[in-house]
Amino acid sequence: MKSLFSVTPKFTIDTCSFNEMFDDERASNRKNFPGIWEGVKELISSGEIISHEEVYEEIMDGPYEDLKTWARNNKHVFEAYDYVDEGKIIADMGKKGFAEFVHQRKKKHNADPWLVAQAKKQGLRIITQERKKGIRDIPRVAEAFKVDHLDIFGLVKEKGWVLRRGR
Image (cartoon, rainbow, N blue to C red; front, side, top):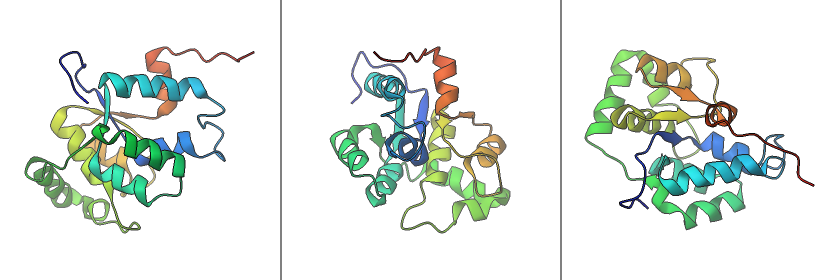
């Protein structure tokens, strides 16, 4: 929820980064690294990290019940579609050789083009665990559209968070 005291958003976060923190099978989950999740929650609370409504929909289709509960309780984090401006950016993605990215088949939702469009429109950086592998990944399209991206550990490094072992 934005208020007079909220900071301007700097990041938008992808579904896979939320999944990384909520999947108990992944080494970097929030139980193994609670400091990362606490830091991310603080950035979300301040308004520095936002996300997109389409990411919310992907989370609701996903397997992580704790993440679904958190997302429902924090729906304000997920900004609504801007069909006009974001739609133009997504159309441009298709015209510039990224039609497979725009139209990739996922279960029900495809947040990736909306996330890149949101970041481009608002001058945000994308937090994503995706790597540059092919034409259908966020880093490749983000770079083509001059949108910066980093992963969770890149955020940790940038923010200077030091993770200490608890006692």
